Length: 289
Image (tube, rainbow, N blue to C red):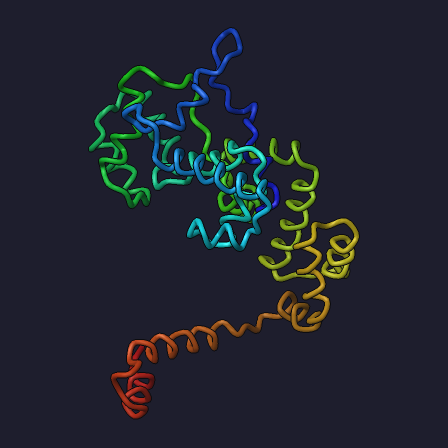
């Protein structure tokens, strides 16, 4: 998914908050301003660094020298150098995921139902798992109070982690909005559609612990034929350890209990590092639940 970020940046036709003449209500430059209408410092810093990096590249400086002089990491300089247009970087700077993202749809529906109290809405989404405070909810609802209400429910931000979760989740557990967004993303990118198909085939074999009719071998062969590079690497690793993977898919044995105890012992060891001897560590391992 990380190599398909460009697809995530495209505006989905499912996002149907348009006026009658077909123009979007949202101002493209609005995302570069804060809630008070002032330029966001992150946007200004991104523009300045992009200009500095490309000016130094035109002078013939190496990326290592640029990173040293600008006090940036080599990876950051390389990312700025690969971005021919600063808008590629500004998208990531202005569309960072927030704690409120997963609850934007719920807040929209509750507002349209007539509930406009930010404190009450914050308590409701906290019961659904929201970990932020009421001030974040108030900032999110500020455009609603000023009359900027989208005609349709907002879509979730397209992030690599969120779309990966949609792919790996059971299809029947997706909401209509999530299913529609994923379908449209796959229509925009055939490579992403192929990756989604292969990932779900493998996930189904793992969940149901089955590999009848050489299903695993067929999956490996298909991926090595036309899968993405990352999936081919995974398939090659499975092929090298084929017997163990096949046993995991067809038997009820698991090393989960052993791995759980290893994690518990490591936790106890790190809690006591530098402050106790082996006898006390042994006693804690034997007596801890």
